[in-house]
Length: 148
Image (cartoon, rainbow, N blue to C red; front, side, top):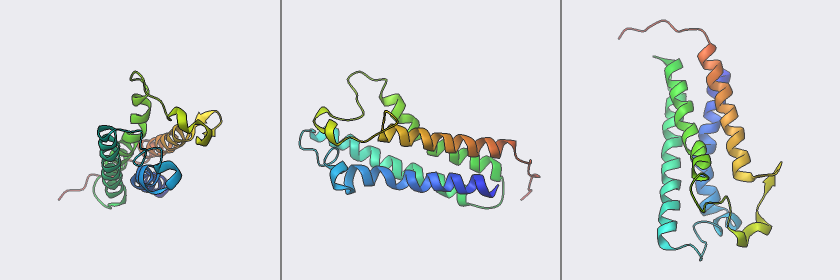
């Protein structure tokens, strides 16, 4: 299961770092999020909450994916599910009234890939990678039970 583990680990690294990079560190993107003067303090609180939660989910996913021994299949499937959570959350957020992937004042600086907002495109790619890895894990050979 080395390829699925590698793919899940890659998504784990991206999940752990991407929200902080996009919302806090990369100046042009952070200006649209944590440093956006139009955002009230409560909106910034929820952005910070999302960043911390995504880092924690990423670290949990990485720990599950990198640990060896025991029920490797179960851990890798659980890691994929944990890592999918923030990316699936983007699509769920779009179902709420008056939400958007970007603020209108940043429309000229927003990146689109194949007609999709860059974050949405990245979420789709990472979810497909996780789905492929999880499918490979689920179809892989069953490990013998280990008694401890």
